[in-house]
Length: 91
Image (tube, rainbow, N blue to C red; front, side, top):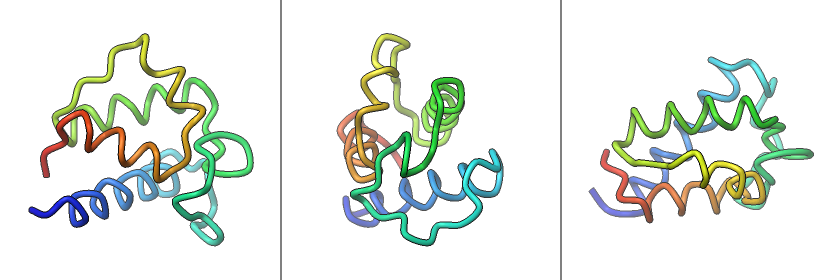
């Protein structure tokens, strides 16, 4: 699987999880790779970010230690996707 396809899969997983399963966002309108993970973007608070991180670990076979979760809050959606890929995500 090419990196861009894997990135697309991770991005779609994040958006589907945040909208359909966690009911945080109502729609993906206006959400881009430049959207922050927190306020004025995906709107994840610290507990929601932890839940999303656990789901990403399970789905893509990556490890994100607890000490690395807080810095994820400063990323954009695109940055989060890139970080999951960097950690060795598998489709």
